[in-house]
Length: 421
Image 1 (cartoon, rainbow, N blue to C red):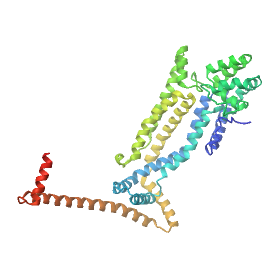
Image 2 (tube, rainbow, N blue to C red; image 1 turned 120 degrees about the vertical axis):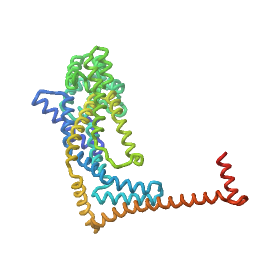
Image 3 (cartoon, one colour; image 1 turned 45 degrees about the vertical axis):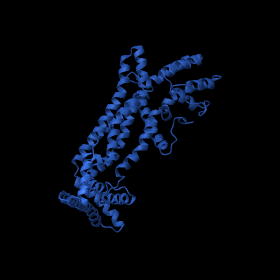
Image 4 (cartoon, rainbow, N blue to C red; image 1 turned 60 degrees about the horizontal axis):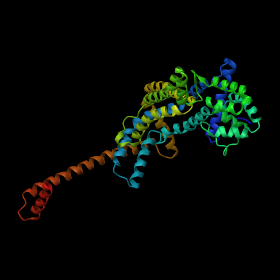
């Protein structure tokens, strides 16, 4: 039976992507082991992250190109939004969407242009998470380290009830009602979630296997060791254990993992290009993004304190990879001629609309006409407001000279009474 049934993802799309990425992680582990004699999951995670984000560079460039193009489109889009600012009826909303779509079409892109790359990246990132979180499910060499002990445990009478009791307790929490403890893969899953104190519990329950348990836990501890810290354990647990034993270096490494995770996430967000030209007060999505950009680094710090350090290591190096890529992409895009980019996109729009019997010139005229109409309508509204104000002032002047006892005079008395009151 290959893989680990409990932890290997079976989610549609994500499961298939995770299987493919798992093959890459397995290959990295085997190359480091056979060619260099290095068996270290922390180093595998770093190399794995660098390779994956290198492959994702084309998607990142496309996403940043859309951000640059948005800066050119935003003045026109903002004008349309202002035109329909106080209109909430369905007809106005449909017209606004239609006019905004025409602007996007004119520049050869779409409202989903910036989201498409994110949609593609999302299952990849979730699959990455699955692989990093469940290493033995995808790396055969790591699973093989557990197998001698697993075979001996399963050959011991009454092992199932013992393992169910250990596995259902914290920190493992693998429910015996949902998972079959007569399966090899389930026992491997349980052992993979062990912490140092849990190995001691296992020795108490299987005293005849003490030497094999010690050698297995030592081997697993070796491949999970990164700068003295066990990456399969949570930093908060590592810090508490280190402070008890006086292992200051381990405590420092455990503390640095969540801090560096939050810091690298924050740097990465700061390096991302912002779309100018939009008024954030009239753009709720921009405000939401600002809030998310503030929360995400803090959320990363919290999560990395409580989850296995290997996941924190992945978050740190993924943020470093994105930051390095962002600096390079920013320099590349800064040298890019935006007029040339717009021209290429409009050529794409031309080919698209030629199939629909609509010329690019007609498309430009329609979009330009729409924007021009916005300016004319705003000017008309401003003129109408000025005329109304002038008429009110004239009426007020005439009211001052009203005859005593007239309707206007009585109205003035009521107005003064209200003002004084």
